[in-house]
Image 1 (tube, one colour):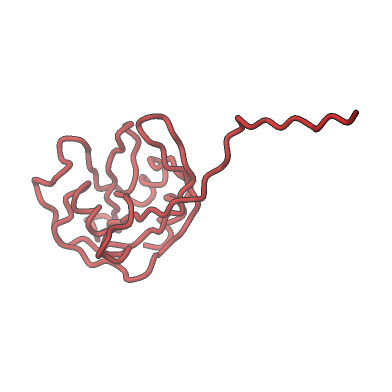
Image 2 (cartoon, helix red, strand yellow; image 1 turned 135 degrees about the horizontal axis):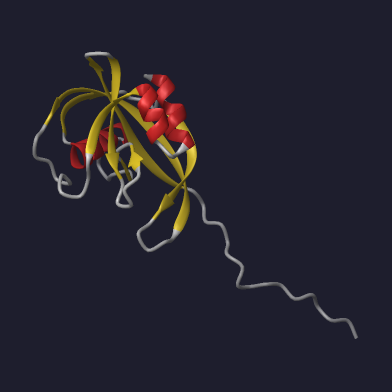
Length: 147
């Protein structure tokens, strides 16, 4: 009698990567090019980032995330991504899913003092060198080379 091999049916199946859009907000500061970082819900420094939005291009969605998370009231967004990478989206529940992140450049012209997520996030202008040290995600660090 032949016994069929047993397969572990409880093993996790890697989900298809989800798409996320991010905004690499930058300006010319007093000492050179600066980028705007925000804190994640876990307190890590990140770029403003979110999901694509119905009725908006990915570039427009990235600009919307820059407004909601960092208070970018006026900015010029690149029509195409300046960088792309495969990252991990970590949810507050602990769930993690792969994400294809498209990073759009946003030349910031004006920041608002009040913005939708001001009570949930810190924001900080930093030099590109400082941003490279603060950003934990390798994909975000590589994107810095585009500004």
